[in-house]
Length: 70
Length: 139
Image 1 (cartoon, chains in turn green, yellow):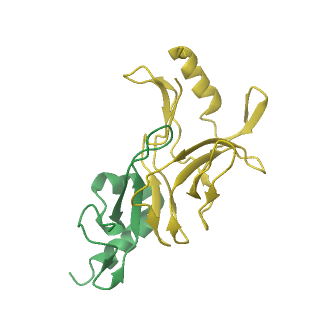
Image 2 (cartoon, chains in turn brown, orange):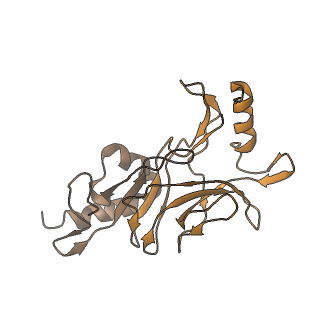
């Protein structure tokens, strides 16, 4: 099962589907490797920083949804 | 035989320059900048383009491409200097990466695979190539 690298939970938590970020660990001219994935609300700081400029609103919305009720 | 390091760097820069506009000519082929990255559900082959992921917009190389340089292994390499990512609008599997020029009928320049594992996505997911992971190596 594809789980979040941070929280080790699947996409669905308590019946709610959460968007994920899939990150290819290798690009062209390299042997295919695994794809790492996180819930958008669980991104490590360096990954969040790398994507915040383009996807900040999506990340903030995912954080709010993921931590709702906690 | 292998390419000399200086020649390898020159070839990398000639094939994948950093410009945001204009054209570059490689032999008999003229390419229009900027280059675009697309992600595929079915991988391309040497002679056939892959199948683009539905709903994915054409992507700019928003991570600019580094100037060619020799790595510690003396391999001339270029790589992206920022994440290249898109938000999906459909569900499917992510299998490939291709780079095109910006002509009306885009010319494919590079193609490559991603993992055989962990590639399923749904609408709203972000697919990303991290910094330094989209590489062009000439040896």
